[in-house]
Length: 207
Image 1 (cartoon, rainbow, N blue to C red):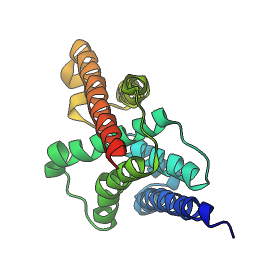
Image 2: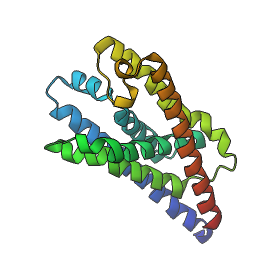
Image 3: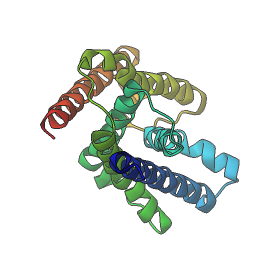
């Protein structure tokens, strides 16, 4: 037996099992939300996709599932996902949780979406991915999710009148302020992502 290869052999199952756990947790929460909703499965799924939180958790399900299969995830994609979920958890608990009172199964799925999956994804990213010395190379990918959601939100709002978040409400803000809000949000993502990547690089260098 080649004992030299054993540490690497042990490492990869842990990496993939943790990724599979995250993907499974996100999928279970998403499936539960769809199942307990009051409409059809399709209507419930469409309703969930109005929220950026769901975008992040769908991303976690797909990307962590990809990683669990043993296939590599591009550093910029992983940095964007980690940033996305960090912002989702932080903004929810800082700004939105006080006005959100889930009941029943949503008490559980809410914790999965806003606490478990964000913390687990960031932990996986910190532990199992290599450092990225050129942090600036990650910024375009990190800014893509909020800008894409901003475009989606304005189209959805114009078609349905529904805006999920007060800071992305075109009817309340007006077109100019809405554009500014999107730019500020993307810049905030860039700042958070750059900070997270810098911390990750420092931790990788130390440990």
